[in-house]
Length: 118
Image (cartoon, rainbow, N blue to C red):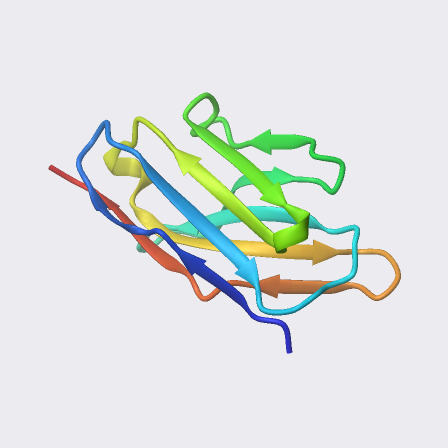
């Protein structure tokens, strides 16, 4: 069973930066999309950013211009660089690897806490 392992969360003050990383525990079939979601207390999980296998990136309006998603296929990993963090960015962040064609899969990380507070 493939596992996605996340790292890099923590507590920062508003305006600071964090970088989240997520790596798969074993080889997986390409192509697949990589995404980051987040879920704040009492809220639904929301899509933050997606990068396709062709390296096309899309962002939620709330993070556009502040967050950058990147991936390294050789390392089976995806990262999320988060700059100019705001208190409303506080949430549990989840990485996701998803393939919808032949041999589909939908893998999730365990979630990592990001807290932005002064």
